[in-house]
Length: 115
Image (tube, rainbow, N blue to C red; front, side, top):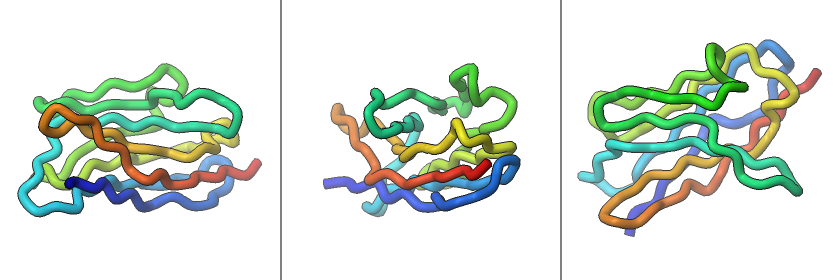
């Protein structure tokens, strides 16, 4: 069983930055593909960004130029660097990683951006 452990959420003022991390709990697991989602209470979970095996990344329009997804050299941890945050970025953020034919989700980390 693989667990994805997220960290890095918190409260910041508008214009601030946070870096989220998503790490595989089991040694030897390689994170080749990963996606970040976010969810606001009462709304559907929204896709935010993804990184694929080649390292190429893609983003939803609302975060382009502000967010950056990356991966450590050991392919064990994925990051979401979030800059110039706005109150509209307030949400619980989740990582999702496909492994062995299954999709695994992190436990979620809360991001609150004050105006």
